[in-house]
Amino acid sequence: MAEIRRDPLIAFRGKNEQKWQVASVIWSVSAIVSGLIGCAEDTRRHRAGRLACTGGWLAGLAAALLALPAAALQLRDDRGVTVNLPAPPARIVSLLPSLAETVCELGQCQRLVGVDRYANWPARVRKLPRVGGGLDPDIEAVLALKPDVVLLATSSRAAARLESLGVKVIALEPKSHADVRRVLVQVARVLGLSDAEGDRVWRQIDAGLAEAAASVPLAGRGARVYFEVSSGPYAAGESSFIGETLTRLGAHNIVPASAGAFPKLNPEFVVQADPDLIMIGDENFTTLAGRPGWAGMRAVKSGRVCVFTPEQADTVVRAGPRLVAGARLVADCLATLERPGPKKGVSKTEPRTAGAPVGAPVSGVVQ
Image 1 (cartoon, rainbow, N blue to C red):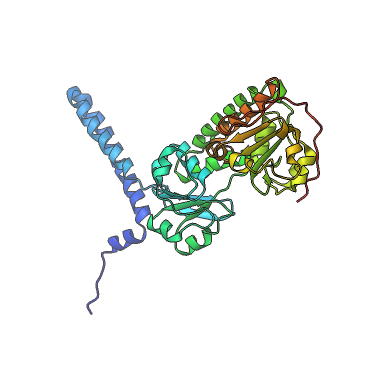
Image 2: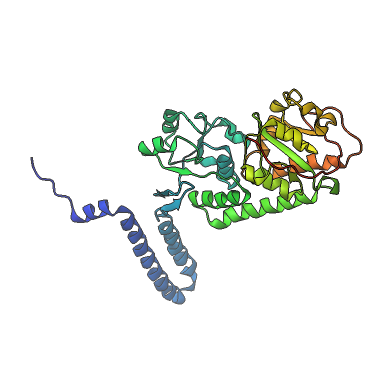
């Protein structure tokens, strides 16, 4: 078989394509700058041709700059894994609703090509292909979307499988207000944006949280609150991002930080704590009064229960750019404590509560 000899220059470029592109652009820019100097000298003698000459060279400069290859990215995700991307991803699959929301809040929703089954905000996300749950997605469905990167939670079991198939994976899971700020900056970097873009969004969130806190009347401050996130019952503890929101709004969470972020409680603990106010999703509310001893709690007897619709619950329980919307819902619930007289019954569309004296906190969560 005849030996095929490659042009040495072509071979060099094949092995060092990105470096060659950068070098080519640098040479082009150098030539353009030299040309501009010559153009200026020439047009000094011919004033009428100055604009035409300069405009041509500037157009060449712009074309050269556009030829620059996209910058490679390197970042460490929440697993402690260093992830390298050759360029900012154009096709992203998100397996955590709050991460899809973060991409969109940073103005890059168009890069999402697939999401998990629970992603539902903003509205355009609902039209994207669904690839199953975030913990155990349909791997084939993910691969079919040909993502440049997959964003998922550290708790997802899909990371190792996807990486073994050559898919880039970045695990980010915000669990606190500080995490939301950090993840905003991390996702901005993934998108090829500056850290300042993530910080800008966080400043807006922080200002919104301050406004929500200022809206809570004196009667709502110090109120002892039980916030149930799902049946079990699983509660939002003081150390969770929901607990941080309650604290910032001036409320007192009956579930101490020592219990964990989202502990499963012994229902008797809540009965003994006898909170001033209960916040719960409507799916769990239907079984609330039937729990042993719960019907006798003052919050239940007096109708001091805020029941969130599924849409409202999604907003409150996601640690992402909608922290402010969630805080406003919680603040609205706390604000009803200033209304005189107990409210009998609970509305599923509008949280209703009634005033109650603030008691001492009860500690000692039983698993």
